[in-house]
Length: 331
Image (cartoon, rainbow, N blue to C red; front, side, top):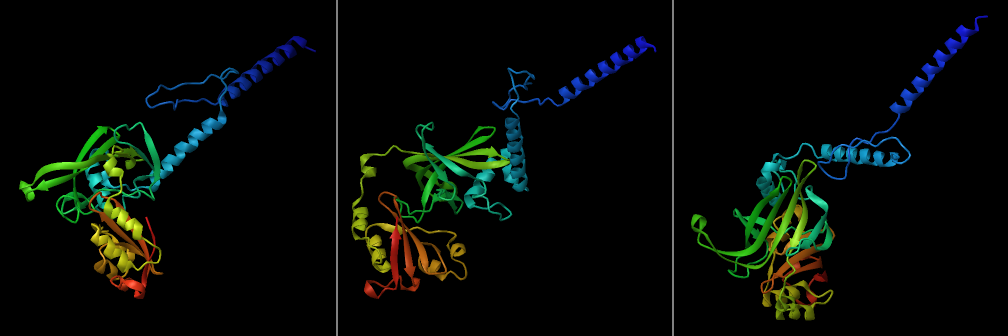
């Protein structure tokens, strides 16, 4: 028997086996190719050693988050043309109107699920996190002008005019500052007379292919006079009672300087012919089982009162115990 040949063949087979095993081990080694510590960071490769173990669950989590982001972006397609970064002014106008040029809902869709409310004077100070379901966007458009849907404190108009400043902060952010304003003149000759009240702002960020409302900057600087209840507010608070006739409450409000706040989408909210919206300008919405929401604003300090009623709305003029329209709650 030729032992030298047998030994040589065995050594060759052993060397080939070792080489194959090493190659497979390298192929199965997970490699973290990109650091997610911050945008623009350089790619990093984690060596396969006991001192630098690869966290498989973390890598899987990263992939899952990336996939979720892609799915979310796809679910929003096709996006409005105004979602483009350079179209931020057009996007804001559509956002204020609530719909894009094709009539698709836009405001709720492109509001972050939770909006950060921060101090206007010190934006690093977080005041609260507000769900988009509870957010009250303050800016509207009437007759091609920026307004708030509350009666003006300076010129007895049904809406309060605003002065807006829309600024591009950076590639992915734009900011809208606004403050109450008084104007004089008509059309092209109209001029800003003065601004009053405290400034506020909205912050929009470009996420998942479109602009999104993510922050509100709210002025917290108020004088003691602003925080003190006015005589009209005190008068209302002292007379509000559950199940009181709505006609009585309405008369009290109007006599103390409160005015109805118009809700543009009242007929949509109510549905059908929505005759109640024509009779009561303060109606925001009504349900099929007899409940309605009414809104008023105080001319002296801009505070808002929302009243819930129950019963036959056609009794809104009726006062005293004969009224079938009653107040159930308020805020």
